[in-house]
Length: 183
Image (tube, rainbow, N blue to C red):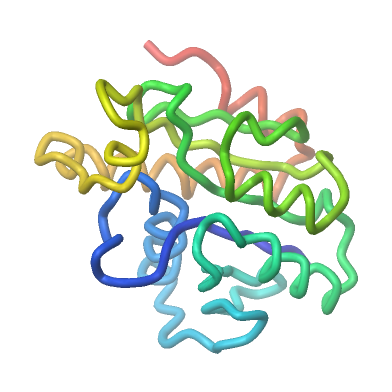
C-alpha cells in the first residue's frame, strides 16, 4: 500500500489558488482515472487506485499532519511509501522537484506532517509557484492568473508522470528523471 497526499485548503474560496496545487494534482489523477466520488476517512477525501490511496486532507494546510498521520498509522506503511505533493515558492512557476527527505523549508503544511510523523524522511513532490512580489500570504492564497491557468494542464500532466516514476522506480531514479534540467 502507498499513499499520495496532495496538500491544500478546503472550500471554494481556495479553489485554483497557488496554495492548492497539491489538491489540484489529486483532482487531476481522480478525473484521469475515473475514480468517482471520494470516501471520507482520516479527515480527508480519499480514493483508491489499485494499491494506492489518494488523499486530500480536509484539515486545512497548517494541520495536514493530523490527517496524514492517521492514514499512515491505519495502513501501517513505511514513510518511504508516502508521497506529499505541495506548492513551493522557492521554485519558478511550474517547475517540479522531488526529494526523498528534508526539512519543511518554511512550508507549514509539510511542517505539520513532519511534526505528526516525527521524521523528515518523507518523499515529496514540490510544484513551483514562483516568488511573491509583495505579501506572501496574499500570493499563496491568491488565485492563479490567466497565464498560469493556461499552463496548469501541462503542469498537472508532468505531475502525473512524476507520480508514475515514483510508483514504478526507486526514489533515486525518480528524482533523477524529475529533477533533470529541462530545456
